[in-house]
Length: 201
Image 1 (cartoon, rainbow, N blue to C red):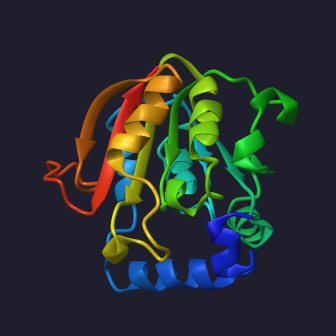
Image 2: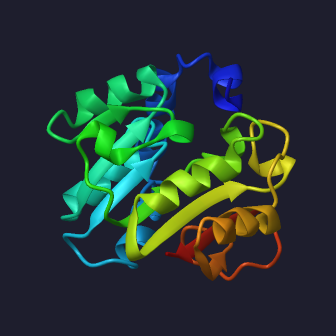
């Protein structure tokens, strides 16, 4: 069972969406992830939102002109995503077993994004397998972007993966390290408790 399921019981979709809606109403920028991704690949590029949740990132990328696919295991989160953007392709799938072609989707994404602490919220011991699955969904030259907490202050669960371990999983999956940032606003990484990492296939 994933740490996310332990934490939420896969029933937090409405609450999660309401929290970000409140942030948006307060004037807070909630589109940093989409803006970061849009700076990496041209409009029209194919993007996989892995662990898409309620669809906040993917819906924004679709609005900006990207060809998006969303995948998540949590039905409550996907229900919100489908309600907000029924015209977009949302799939319920376990990232540890993710196979795009089994869903009728081509495995040639220009960019795969895993935002929202996807990696630390996986089931323990599945991190390398998931990175391998995501890497396999990329076209040659495609990018994997993952942002997640590295310490207790940036996570709702105990820390479980370091940036060095993540880099090892990426290397084993045939990915090359490109850069790492401290935020989705591309602030320089200074060794802090949150990192946004970019790797290329």
